[in-house]
Length: 148
Image 1 (cartoon, rainbow, N blue to C red):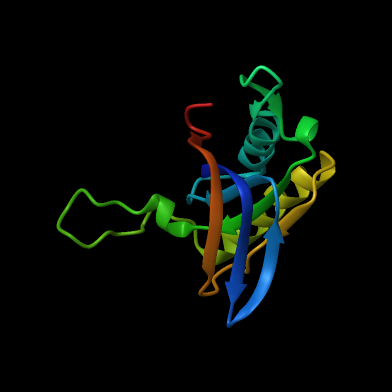
Image 2: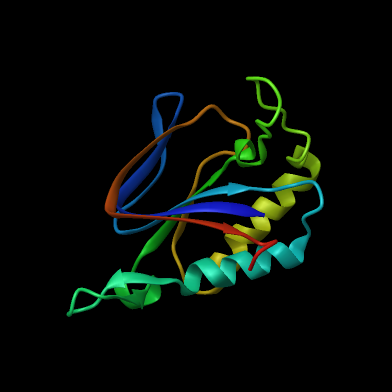
């Protein structure tokens, strides 16, 4: 699994003109799932993201976690995170998991975050979505379960 995690002051996702999910302070998580991923990766990635200490303490240091600041998560499925752009100008997505594999793992990741006590808003898997965010910092990290 691969995630792009952005610390945000606010974020929302709109589908067909309607806001589907929105948060104030927390993380916008773009989540990509590859063909070989299993539940173990969902658990590992949720644990890492929910425990990241990237919020500022009283001294201005990135020392506080999502839970310590009462943050929320907006999780958006993002198969293009596994796009391969090595050849030509058009990416191929052979490494991205098909929906029958990706949807249960996407849902597992969300459940793992909720089980850790966080409010989680989501997009809709496979939908055309418009994602808006007000970045905080900006702080953006790329996490991949192959390197965690």
